[in-house]
Amino acid sequence: MLNLRNLDQLLKKNLKDKIVFIRVDLNVPIKDDVVLDDTRIERIIPTINELLDKGSKICLLSHFGRPDGTNNKEFSLSKVITSLEEHLKKDILFIENSFEDNIKNKIQSSSVDKVILYENTRFHDGEEKNDTDLAMKVAQNGDYFVNDAFSVSHRSHVSTVGIAEYLPSFSGRYLEKEILMINKSLSTGSGERLGIIGGSKISTKLKVLENLTENVDKLFIGGGMANTFLLALGYKIGKSLCERSMINTANNILLNANKNNCEIILPVDALVAKDMEKGTSFNETSVDQIPPDALILDIGSKTISKISGILKEMSTVVWCGPLGLFELNPFQKGTVSVAKEISILTKNKKIISVAGGGDTVAALSQSNYNKDFTYISTAGGAFLELLAGEKLPGLEVLRK
Image 1: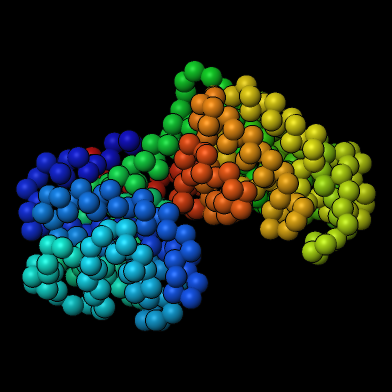
Image 2 (image 1 turned 135 degrees about the vertical axis):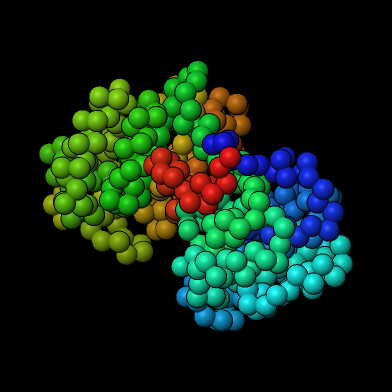
């Protein structure tokens, strides 16, 4: 598991009454103080319970939103307490100003039936700067540190890296599973691997594209970034979104993919419209017949059929990025149709399917097929960076 110190190693120690900081990600969607999606909360429970069973005192650290280093109650973690208590079946002791005070005695005297939740780490200006003094101030209140928040492990913050420099540090179960599933989707083995990459821009996923061409057998490119590749190949794309400055880059990716024996697959047809307004009229057309006043907003039925056929030949698929303007009907059809095919193959144990990235998770949740995937990563930037082969500071600090 990338040679990280893991929870099994920590559990071998005498943890009775030891204070364990766990970095979790409680940055969950909330409306009217009600958690709308508790997936991230559900996934941290195993790590917390294993440590509680060893007699540890648990202190949870998390950010919520972007308060920009100010004590903005709009972003208070008090909003997640009810959901946390329901999942843990334990009371939460909420501590405000937790980064500022020496509260080790308060933690030690807390009931073993309670889990401590620190207020939003990003209320403190030094958090995102990975301020050394702040890291030492927090670390002096604990005995061990566990990172169970893969989703923020690409951030060099006090709560992901700084504290880990001053306390014996380990990875949690949730973080372990995220990395293992992503690595599994890219690892060599029997059967062929398909990468599906979508979204609007090559520039935001350039290293992901480059790394995938080295790790998958076929790579389907959809979404707005496919337009840039089509333009690079000489197709006329009308008024469609594209990055003209990335045409040479697109051509280089195509060349490198060929050298790596990775087949690049692009849309053969598309749903097009003259604008992106709700209720706009649309047509389906071949990519070599895009009208000059049209916008490509989704993949077409022939492309969907082509992907479906390819999927039946694969053993693994890793997906990052929607294939069209999924927020607007009917341009979610491509994403939903491919999600359905993957879900069927996964349920029938024909394929291992891993997906991640913020827009991807939102699109798949909208499709209602997300629960059938082998694994859906809740990480955004960290998922992308690991796919790109980047070193994540929150993981590097946990290496043996």
